[in-house]
Length: 116
Image (cartoon, rainbow, N blue to C red; front, side):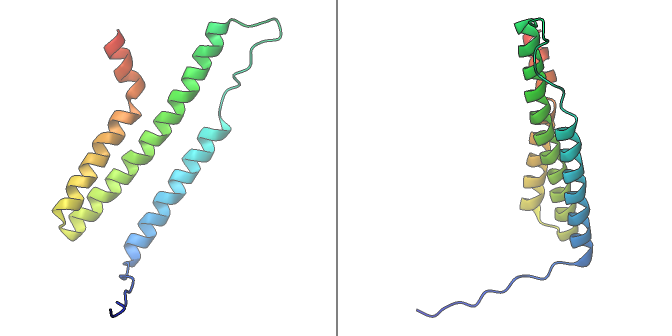
């Protein structure tokens, strides 16, 4: 068997700058989300357990929203790259990622509408 030589494809400068900007925005949003977490501890006089569970629920849905926003941003990047390269399969993947990011971002609101 002969060994195949593979080489990396060149990445245009605009794509590199765009990806770097996207990564910087994601890292900044992640740092802002992590550093602005409210305390989940109960008060010194013995807080209400339902309040603690509500705070935990709010925290978890905040993390889910952050993941949804990351997926939403990645879907926008994929759609933009597919429009540039005229690749229909990448475009469909981009729109699916975009739709998934929207659904995950608004999961709490969707559940509230379903439950009522």
